[in-house]
Image (tube, rainbow, N blue to C red; front, side, top):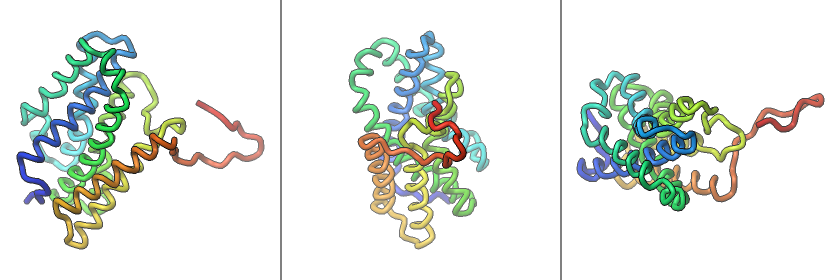
Amino acid sequence: MTSQIFPSDVQQTLDLVGIFVFALSGGLLAVRKNMDIFGICVLAEVTALGGGVMRDLVIGATPVAAFSNLGYFSTPLVAGLVVFFLHPEVERINRAVQTLDALGLGLFCVTGTVKAHDFGLGAVSSMALGMVTAAGGGVMRDMLAGEIPSLLRWDREIYAVPALVGSALVVLLIGLDHLTAVTGTAAALTAFVLRMCALRYGWRAPRAWHRNGSRTSEE
């Protein structure tokens, strides 16, 4: 039933690395919000696993992978403890964390799209759930922390768009029957490069046109 892009052990390793890095970003936000160790671990878990949980619930893949795989559930806890004890050091390597986060974005938009398609969803729905897998945890993190989700803010570099592009490439590859480890990796790298370019050059999505003296800058 499942379209296996990578060997299972490689897939597991990549998933755990992506989960760990996503969890670091959640833990760091919790520290900035002055949360205690429980809050740090909760935000780490939600950021790392929230997107995958939403996807699995939508497609009916239960019990969801986040709770049926001990490695998936425990990895964010480890990341949360790392942030709890070493958050100044983690903050200092924030650029590296952002790079790894972009790699996780690329990986999860691909695997999320494939899993949704395997469960019978069409191209558009699979693409949407690929984006949710990659970015949904970040939305839940920001909402729990009392912030407008980053991907909805005009003053933040694009995040969901690279995930959508990667997911769209996967859907196209599936339709052409050309989805392999090589082409799937290429789709993930495309999303990664777009995200890194957004960080480097400050790419943002356009806002609505301003007319008749409407306000021109709102945070």
